[in-house]
Length: 96
Image 1 (tube, rainbow, N blue to C red):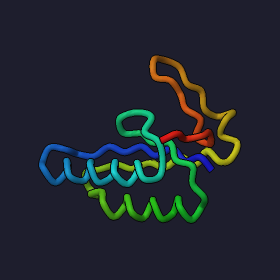
Image 2: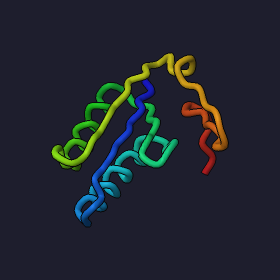
Image 3: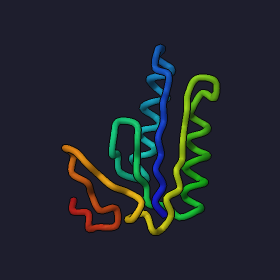
């Protein structure tokens, strides 16, 4: 299923900037950054819960915000892209 993850981390102090880096690093391990604080991740239910647990253990519940949008398996009809950055195919071939 496609999961859209967005976050907003309070970065007024060094601890917040560290949390921001840690969250981004975890999200990069599971998906593709599509905007500064937004990732698209192809996950199964277990991976989604595991990532949710990891990210929730990083954020400061009093200062930060984390959102998971579960778009399911039929996400192609639910996502439209407009603008400068080209879109990518999450299930496409990845050349390294």
